[in-house]
Amino acid sequence: MIKKYLKYIGLPVGLSMVLPVLTFAQDSTAVVTNTVAAIVPTVTATPVPFISAGNTAWMIMASALVMLMTIPGLALFYGGLVRSKNILNILMQCFIIMAVISLEWVAFGYSNAFGSSTGILAPFIGGFDWAFLKGIGINEVSPYYISQATERIPHLVFVLFQGMFAVITPALIIGAFAERIKFRGFLIFTVLWAIFVYNPVAHWVWSADGWLFKLGALDFAGGTVVHINAGIAALVMAVMLGKRKLPNGQHITPPHNVPFVVIGAALLWFGWFGFNAGSGLAADGLAASAFLVTHVAAASAALSWALLDWFINKKPTVVGISTGAVAGLVAITPAAGFVDVSGAIIIGLLVSVFCFFMVSVVKRKLGYDDSLDAFGVHGIGGIWGAIATGLFATPVIQSAYSGAFAGNPKQLVIQLIAIVSTLVYSGVLTAVIFKIVEKTLGIRATDEEEIAGLDITQHDEIAYNEAE
Amino acid sequence: MKKIEAIVRKSKFEIVRKALHEADIDFLSWWEVKGQGTAKQGLIFRGVAYDVNTIDRVFISFVVRDINVDKSINAILKSAYTGESGDGRVFVTQIEQSIRIRTGDHGDESLYDKK
Picture 1 (cartoon, rainbow over the protein chains, first blue to last red):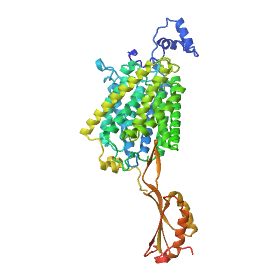
Picture 2 (cartoon, chains in turn green, brown):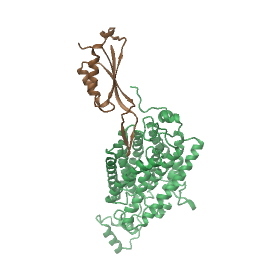
Picture 3 (cartoon, rainbow over the protein chains, first blue to last red):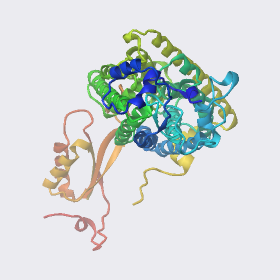
Picture 4 (cartoon, helix red, strand yellow):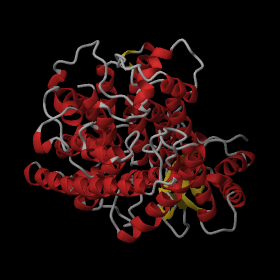
């Protein structure tokens, strides 16, 4: 039964079986261990996985860090970018996603994404065996692990950690339809999207039964599942919802609070350490490496966006460097457990170039109104990250995985299959869900609502009150 | 009595205020205003230069005795000047009556005057 849920076979099976026997040899290196394994081939007892206190402590903390990314991280990042009449609407959208999707997740989302089903649907979506976390005891070890096969975390911590990912993914889409969506329509759209898009795609890529997982697609922390998935949904929403009614026709509005953007971006950066370093599901060397490359990629991308600003528009901008940092974090997400520092630097430096070009040239040429560049940053950054994982993955980090530059060009093809299938599935389903919500509840705010602002029209509240 | 109103650059406001103080004009009101005109205010958002079509300026307003009108105007003209488009305007209006609420003084007596 455990075998069925092996997520990544990070270490050779023989090594993982022999390791616990060798705990007395504290300084055994992999080479020594293999030698011993060769000499003593009779060790066959399968070690019983147990809950490691150290790994559990880190993963509880990591889950909390990822929670912080949505509120207040992303909420302030997006909230600062909109006009002052719409900030509460953004904060409310992020907040209610936290509430609703968390409940959806424990109700059946987790079971759909990470559980198993039978028959033809098995590679595409899980069943309802774990609905309301039925049967998951508090001392049950997680069936999922990356490199620590024996020293695991409680299953419940895995549920929690993944729940935070399920929350932030639909929240990323907010950037595309900001400032012009009815709250009611938004909420129903988001719930349907989580059920029919996020959960299946998470199943494809991360579940032991998932077809992309079985194909060998590499997505350490959610480049495909989170960023490409949300990014393409954002593009579809921006196009289908239409442009905002803006007086100057430029489709650019000045961010109403740039310090909020900076606080939001900084909290995202901070929380992303939980997101990426936590995705190893253990407090070990792999987590350290993921933390390091995450930080380095964010730094590289922040710097490269600032330099682009400086060369092209003569001044480095604060919104620019914040956007660059987020783009870097997006790009390193799928690669965090597979690339080394040099790979991370290249991934970071280049992602800003692609995203900068996308938001400043391509978006304007195509004329869609992705208000806060959810596609331009998360979609493009995610696609680049998924490709880059196929290019720069190095066996130095996890010996079983290598990319094109390490002599495994097939990995790049697999990555492209994962990218395209996610783009198509998420894009089409998003369009269908949009149409359903539009025809039933209505989704686009009226012109009057848009001009008066969504804070007052959707929530009867104003962010910045004059009263002393 | 005349009301003197001026629209000046935000960057010049403190200098104008100082110049008025040196001209013995120590009582005035001002507020920050947005307007439109030929001056441009360029901004950058994610690699795109754009124009918000609004210009930030400070609007100053005060009432003086007739004898103080010229020195007030001169103080503003000198201090608010850059020579570039967008330096602003000064307007002068006749004031019919002025009453100081505390004392009930009317006309020139109600206005502040150091001398």
